Image 1 (cartoon, one colour):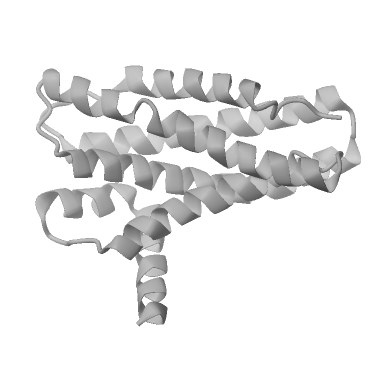
Image 2: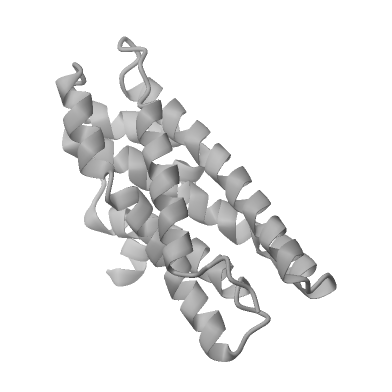
Length: 197
């Protein structure tokens, strides 16, 4: 039973990463009902990607730094998306959106899952430049470039998913993406992720 749930969750996450708009639209229309393990799989993809990338941010420190940065990176990223999420649903509803809370949450989960995979794919970039040029300023620059690139890509995925969920509305919550970015930057600074030894 557990093996089938894991296999189903992985397959559904694969679809969510390949076609995030269709994945969310099918749920919103009631064409499919994603079981709990699909939701958990989306969260796990986001957590693993950000945690493993964060661990590469602590390469020049001790083992404790590697573990701390892994946990801090995934915590900061998760909080940056979770804290403003109620505001997205409430303000969207006030401005005429008819999306249920579950579809709004699914759009955010699909986006963060996609971002987690993008962070996972960025590990070789950070690892290579951190080892090749061990200057704290240069490592900071590399990480800022990676986070900016992944952030822009996630914004694009989120906007496309929201546009497909409510095509007649024609309004995407760009203000919310700015709020997520600012919250994320503050949390990354607070957790000390951009301090390199």
